[in-house]
Image (cartoon, rainbow, N blue to C red):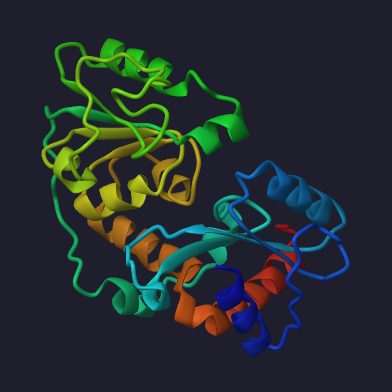
Length: 267
């Protein structure tokens, strides 16, 4: 991620320097994966100094093994775009159409279907210090929806994946190997801390309860938004996702958005 990001910054008129350790000498700091303790510490120091940080991570939508077309998401200072960032993001559908044209909006929702609880990865657990989140969420879901099937969907390849020695969650219904799309088909609700999976649920029309992430901007109003509200969110969130070959426009967007946010007192 480092070299395409640096090339894009050059293309946007910035002057990037690739470093193995934080020096704090530049206007912008760019980090890939703030769940890493070193990167998070650098982010916090840079934000405290009043300067912006571009926080890159795996994309919300789409996957590709081709690095030229690899999708990454970005936010300014925070792990995910805040409500203020989403408010200021254009609802222009051109990014959605460029990134997700083959993907159609769906309605997988079944009112009395299973409730799917989405797990977090080990880095996120260490980062947030919430190792009991999944177990607590599963128990709460079972108490709220007696008689309804509650499915635990661990993050792939995480310590919470069934059968691994570090598995901390014991639950009768675990779906670790099926695709997320298959798990969500016929579901009545997705519950998660904050996850890219929420965006998939939004596309599929499955109601969501989440505590953070970009989609909290949509779902804090209620778990079952209208199709028009879902599309409005999807159009906006695509402006926070870019391919490696689009890093020049990505940086142009970030610089312009940072200026708007700072002028509005939202940073």
